[in-house]
Image (cartoon, rainbow, N blue to C red; front, side):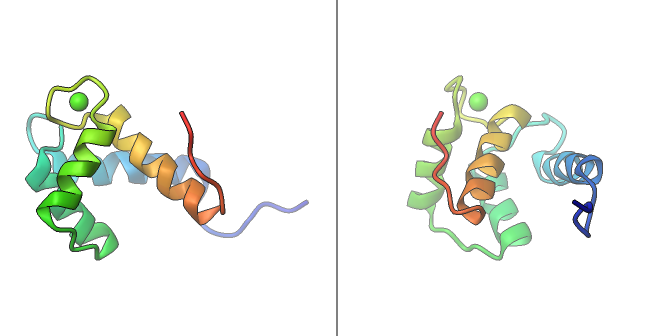
Length: 90
Ligand SMILES: [Ca+2]
């Protein structure tokens, strides 16, 4: 079995970190506005405030009103599972 073409897993991890940091700002966490901008900038998704609030509520495990990198990764895992035809369950 040959390796798939495209970015390596290492490059993907670095890319995820870079994307998160570019949107999270100095506090290194995404607030609702930053989450909305990230969705628009990275996925061309223009979610309304209700959708963004629902996402924040679902992903914000520690309930501080912000998404840290590990909470952001829950979103990425969910999207990756969807692209793989699976439902993410935690
Ligand atoms: Ca949080």
